[in-house]
Length: 101
Image (tube, rainbow, N blue to C red):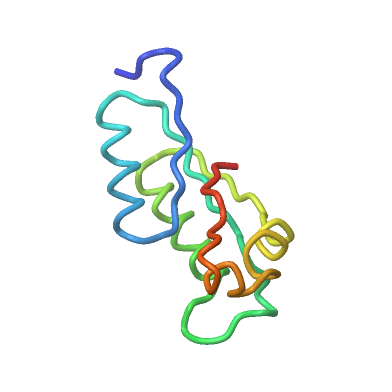
């Protein structure tokens, strides 16, 4: 039985870790909503990872767990806050703050 007012958003990537986290929260009685964060544009992709495929995997996880799914885009914010400044802060040990959006 789900307790009223116990709502939580769980970031889902389509991978095992986030799927298990969502499952455990659901089993503890939380009303879980899966949220996939799109952090880069598919046009900028190189390599094996595909944001579209990851999103599809995350959607399937939410379907399997019977929880709502939402996709949010942070492409612009991720570019401006992470990629834009490149590695300069790492070289000078000035690391960015950790944030929750």
